[in-house]
Image 1: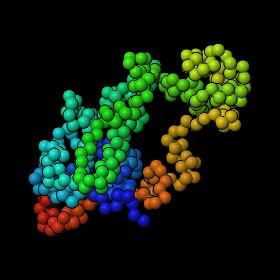
Image 2 (image 1 turned 45 degrees about the vertical axis):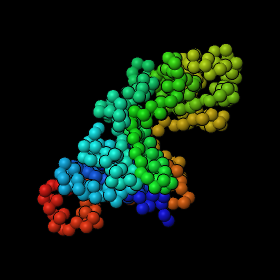
Image 3 (image 1 turned 180 degrees about the horizontal axis):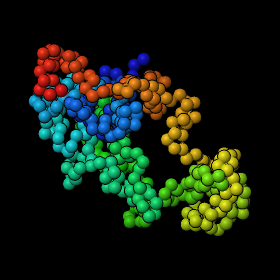
Image 4 (image 1 turned 90 degrees about the vertical axis):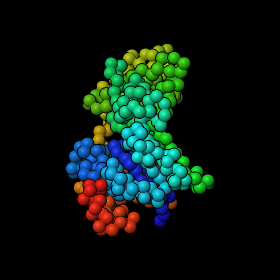
Length: 393
């Protein structure tokens, strides 16, 4: 069974999350991804923690199905190896420090002249030009610049996302950008430049709060785990101390909620609550009424009422709950992949595919494939030994 990207070779000068997340998804679809790492320590994300049998949680997430090649790109002999690999590649992805790739002769303009069919994807904090081009960018800093922190958290305190949302956004747009460039190359025969910034990626995801605050209007308030503008939509405590998440979307659901969940049909026409804008304005009063009803019920009983009324609801899972989620188990979403620490569980990529199976190959150790890659380029044992002696690999 063939995969969509079988036969596509991707060279990636990557570290941390954004670029590795992009290239792992390309590998999921069958691409050969050669990950270039520093000799010795490799990608610094390998050292973030040791939570997965001694391996780093971030690293195992975004680096399966890749080959690891160690090169000290400050040395001409190592840079020559990279240039030789690029000559036979389809895609180059990089998220080095601003300007670093160009200084090594790996900018799009220089490469396009030599390799007109090559696709070059640059991932950065702010993009290839503009006044912020050379500014350092980390995930939390972009969350701040993109306004994400201003609408996330409690009224008293802004809160960051619990995952690397700016990196993930940039990785997703880099991934789709590369796929689009491959499709375009299939039509024109020419490569192209994909310039993805973390700021622009997360700004796209901020579309609702931006438009809500259009032309200086009041932005959505920080409302903890509740929806900022729809109510009731958020967490509520049951009598056993458990938390139930529920959400209403329209007036029909409001009526059903009052009649079948709260057992208070008179609330339907209460002038404080007979439209979402009014419920949002009087959310403290409505919350007190909801909690009064829920206080006499267990979490399971609240969920039972909500399900019977077909009101959307969810458990507030922790990580243990997600690992054991019955829906993921029922849909057989878990596989095992190899790693330097042995076999570990891994989720299949989202979306079932009837035409092919996702690639789920091991997570490499630092430099695991260096010798094999060099041999594939025709380097002799003596050449490889000389590179190793010079610490170029």
